[in-house]
Amino acid sequence: MYCSNCGQEINDNAAVCIHCGAAVNAGMANANPLGGAQMTYHDIPKCKHCGYIGQPEEEKLFRPMDWGIGLATIWFGFGLLYFIVIGIIRSDKKKRQKCPHCGTVGEMTDMY
Image (tube, rainbow, N blue to C red; front, side, top):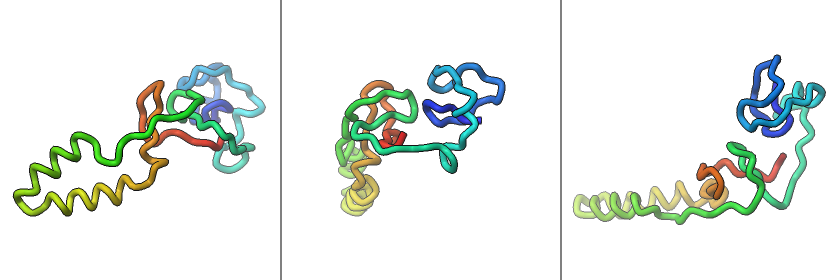
């Protein structure tokens, strides 16, 4: 079955969700979040990992690691290509949202 709070799959006999710690509501917990659960849009996003509700932090397009790799490989002719590829991969701002509570990246959702 699935937790009615975080939507993660849990044991059928569970009284408490092992992912978020919420008490399991037997009526809502059996609904599959992808198929039958009633998901609604919220203005404030929620972290799917820890359940934090609030505004996420946004990671920079190029992390310090990216700058190091890009500048180190520029001598070999791959640096510019590396920056272009990383820029394309990380251009989606939703995938760069970071939870200020647990630090996971890309786990914020506005559908819950």
